[in-house]
Length: 536
Image (cartoon, rainbow, N blue to C red; front, side):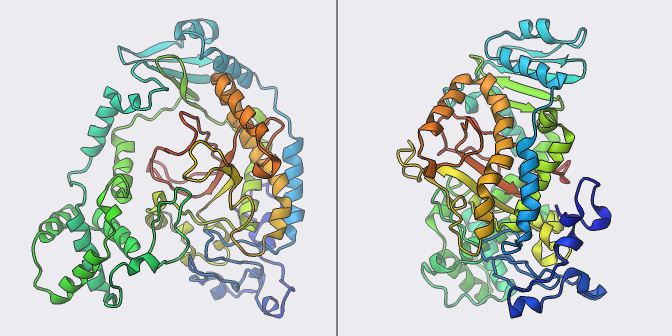
């Protein structure tokens, strides 16, 4: 995140501070010449908020002469500020010239990962563990869990799920472990899931309370009433429009604004006919515009209930794993999960890791990035109440560049109707097709891909290659067979086809169904996190 000059770490150059970034006049047009720089704002002007509104294009932001918010973006960007070259090129060059450190800890981790697919836990412990640190945490018919220390200081947890077969997708849900987790998670809430009638009841209450004129919104008009950024995800499942947003608001109100007593009363009231004629009229409009897909929790989950359950389960149900290295394998020793804490720092050191964070941060400062489009981001408005620093409407000129929630998809994919990938093409974000002036970012994207995304490729390769060599080799073969115009280059030996660059985004817990069958996904986290102990 761009820092104020007084708060910036020593590693952040002055040119990347808020005062410098927002302090240059924009002489490109007569209109932009009139926009005050941040340093020209008075005290009260610096405290002003409501400068922009998510989903509404804004080209004149007081205190930010180069600032631009497009209607589809989740960040205020600066795509026509030529300083992007002066700032980004040195970051790219430093990342590209950086070499892996010769760290004894990384050498030990590599040895461990190489043994896991073919070696029993007993043999691994005998060969690599520090004396008197080995512990069998659990041993039964379903699972084996052991912990030990590696290279004197690295804590390791290995887990074999004997009741899971990676090649049998249904085996995950059949386990006793999964059944107990589901039961204990659901038990955290005394309230049952919202019914269709209850949701419609609260939607009608919101319309009545806010005196929204919905009389003109008759049958099926919700299909053409789109509010804010596009909500059409790559999956093709549409989620948007006035009544969709109203349904989300009803779910948020029920799970987060109502007390247990109020929720109980609402459930009872939803089963009776009201004496309020205006409420009844609004309820009819809601029922007319109710989409059939909303009847199915599979097609349209209540993400606010899921989010609340996950928050509670994270504290009361799910075990917090604190070891530095955690690897889970199935009954055949095929890896199904692997995590190494501070992997970036272990490979390249603290300094280069900080440069990588600055690179992503400055890319998001200059480049317009899409607001999250998927239905899985339905709780974004609630996340902004938990983290008001991400709410654009509450941001001042100094905090607006950091009030961002966005996700860009760089790389290649196939259409929804092509699960076997017969026709692969670059994503809209890769080709910068969303509109607006992005020539500077387009020019720099190949270097961004090599320098920043390339480091993510290296990190994920560090885990995947030794743990599942066949999967890695298959990825290399697939990528090498694609035409250059249908992929991005991040490395000398690419094996990943798609990167989702998420900035402060929250996505609901889910299982992707349309990705590579039985494939692995890599997750690299950078920067600081302020959400513990709550999931966010």
